[in-house]
View 1: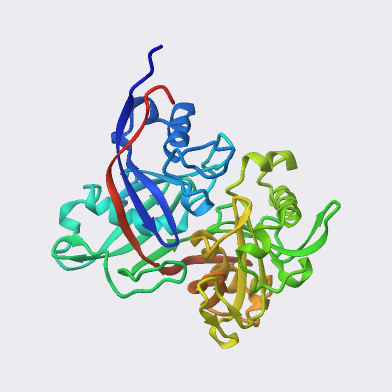
View 2: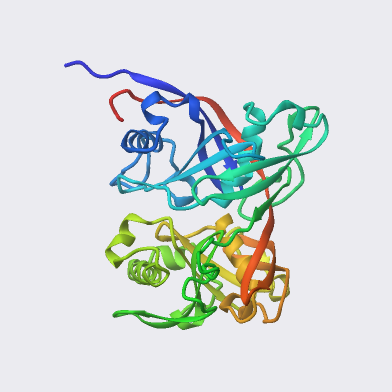
Length: 395
């Protein structure tokens, strides 16, 4: 019996924010995977090691969490006044699909670095020393993101003293601006798809809850922690080890997606795991983060816990942080009320790994709330570069 050989695909393994992923240049992919479709999805699944019934991704580059089961495809931008087109694929761990429905805000921090180092940014735009502004077109959500990447001696600076809770070692700070992060709706009110900053979300056999349903950064369903039996101080093991709790959250997510108009039937949620996210908020409280770091009540404006791909996230998704900052800036959302109410341009929120500050500027235009941009700092680092190998007959 003969077996297909392995093929080599140029790739870079990078950390961006509190996530890791495999980065590719579009023109380095095998020709049949350079276009969207089954071949590309099958290739990425094999690279990451999915679907894996053991949920470990031992035979691939994935790390068996939503934060480490990610892929990025980059190319010179086809959009005017942009440097790079950024396509993100969230790879399911135990199912055979890649979710293309949203962005990864954490890996966004690594996009500018990769683009500069791989010739996707024009040389004349890269200073010898200083800050390089990389103009990113986020293909999944059709939005512009600006990354401010530090440059030292003509090279991307990756080391530094910027500390990010959820990341073990300090690194260079990369500031990210998410421009016009809310969804673009024909009715002008798609940031809040129901037209309300707070709705009643009815979930059969689970309950009825107050919810803020928002499309900003990534579609997100915000709930009050106390309404669903939590304090807002929970760490991963308190929820991820509770199968019944995870099932309830998934049902809430499915009915929230339906109310947001993202799906037409709750059954469709199973094939749209990446979006929407579910998060719950509470007023500030003291707690011990997963590292043992003590977070005091005075350290935060509010607490937020968010689920990604069916599990409580170990820190906070970057796109969900955009949603948090946006919702906090708009009076009377659940996020805003948990932070004390009123108008604000920034919040520091507590998550399982510590705290994070995110800023957003909201204003009303023609009676509708709009947010021009949201800003946060992240860091990024190349972990390994070379080739990833997969069997030639796997896609």
